[in-house]
Length: 281
Ligand SMILES: C[S@@+](CC[C@H](N)C(=O)[O-])C[C@H]1O[C@@H](n2cnc3c(N)ncnc32)[C@H](O)[C@@H]1O
Image 1 (tube, rainbow, N blue to C red):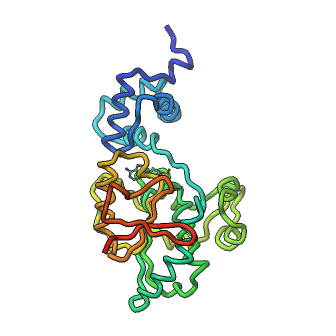
Image 2 (cartoon, rainbow, N blue to C red):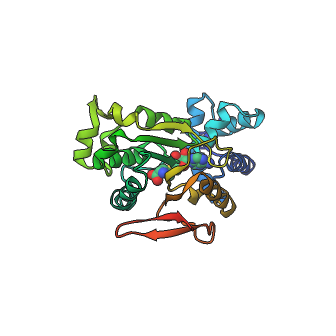
C-alpha cells in the first residue's frame, strides 16, 4: 500500500527513541517523548532535501551508518536557533553601562579584551555585542580584541559569518541608527558591514565536546542554551566556562538560566539594568 502524505511524516516509537538518544549523545539536547511532533516536523525538510520518500526512510539510513553528514544534519535539525538582535535588552545595557567601562579601566595597561559568545546561532547576538563595543566605545578602536562566536550547527554559523539578514530579522530589536551605521542594503536583505564582520571569529564548538585551547575570556555570553540540558551537563559546561574565564570576568546567561544550585563558584551580580555572574573571590 502506498504511503500517504501523513505516513511519510510519521516516526515509530523505536525510531523516535533512536533519534532522541543520538541527539542527546551528540548535543546533550534532551528530547522528551512529548516532543515527537517536533522531531517529526524537523525531520520532514531534511528528508525532502536529501531525497528520502519518508522520515522513517531517512532514520533507517542514519541508523545504518556511523557518523557522516546525514547524522549531523539530523542532530542540527533538532537545535532551536531562535534569536534576535539585542534579545532581552538588559544584558546589553549592563554590558554598556557597567561591564565595558569597568574592563576598559582594569585592562587599560594591556589594551586587550577577549570575548566569547557561545551558542551564537545565526549571529544576531555576537553582532549586538560587537555593535555595543564599536558604537559605544570608540576608545577601543586601538585595542587588541579577540571575539569568538561559536555554535554546534555549521548552518547557523555560516549564516552569521555571511551576515545577511532579512527586513523581518533587522526589525526584531535592532535600533534604526545602528542599522544605518553598520549594515548595507543588498537586494531585499541587509548585510553587516565588513569591519563589524571582521571583529568576530565564527567557529564550530560543541559545548559538550572537547574545547580547543582558548584565550582567557573577560566576557562570556552563553544564553538560552543551558535550558536544553540536564543538570549534570549544565554543571560540566559551567565548570569548563569557569576555567576559560579570567578571575574578574563577566558571564551572561539567559533570563531563564542560573548558576544557582549548579555552580556555586559563580555569584549573581545585579545592576540597575540587568545582571550577570562573576566568580566568587
Ligand atoms: C535558542 S539558540 C540561542 C541563541 C542566542 N544565544 C540567543 O540567546 O539568542 C540556541 C543555540 O544553541 C546551539 N546549541 C545547541 N546545543 C549545543 C551544543 N551542544 N553546543 C553548542 N551549541 C549548541 C543551537 O545550535 C542554537 O543555535
